Image (cartoon, rainbow, N blue to C red; front, side, top):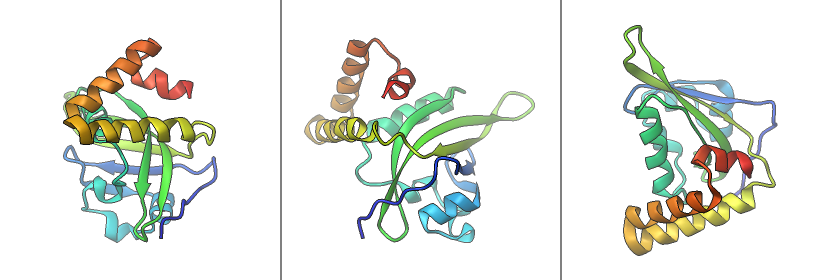
Length: 161
């Protein structure tokens, strides 16, 4: 199956992980859209839903932001248990303990703007091609050049789509 799964704008997919990305909490909406039971998701690495068409550089950017205590916004294509896929506009934030140490991550994912998807799909296809051609460094250079040309940070860029 390679069908796209969609969900209403008022639904929020929520998950919480430990600092290594192991799922500690998954709300009902996330389970339903991804096609997993809560029991199947808890204890699994969050990349259980990673779609192979996602460019690695986007996840590098995500991890760089959240490991430095910053929030991340971005479009992510995920894979369902049944082999379908769904797009989300993700907001990932670190969770801190009382002393300021990162103890996990919280992710809220909303339905993407449909008019942004053709643009993001084209960009991600180019980033994947760059990764195949020259590895992560080539993909990262392409993305950095695009952001410099747009005069925007990544979060500003995705909000502008």
